[in-house]
Image 1 (cartoon, rainbow, N blue to C red):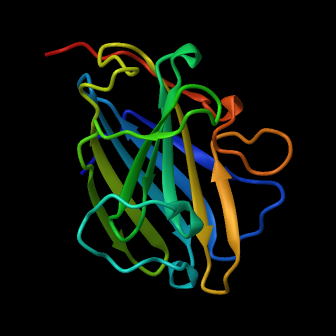
Image 2 (tube, rainbow, N blue to C red):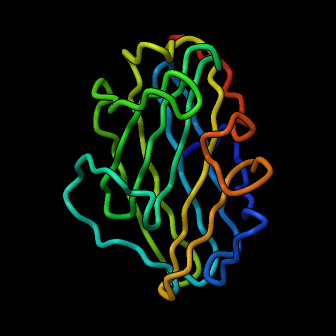
Length: 189
């Protein structure tokens, strides 16, 4: 069971509609430097969500084209940011950007996250545990800014976009307005 340091609720983008999911909460835990645990909890008619079958965990691109849970992290806007994607299949991705949508590269220094998922009729949970030690632009003992988001695909084919905060216009999870959560620094035990 995840000890919850904080809980955030994602908001549905104003231009999105979603009949399957009525709410998405994210529980966030940072109990030691360089480590982050996220639990995405979707409430609604889970049978109406398109969830990829669980596969062997592996790095994969374009996960955001289907149901996908995302986290964006930075220590400060001046140093760029990281994007993490987690799919119900347990496939994952990690990218580094030098600035807003600029110089995207695969973040090869990221260890494979541990991803676990479970579903019931009205609840779907995906929990991921990230070891972020050694990330050049994410000092382990610094405060981090966090943007959380999700793309939800329904069995009907419709997609909806959820985030902590949405900038004006179309959904944009990379926008600085989305980095709406601050994780305080954690000291070593």
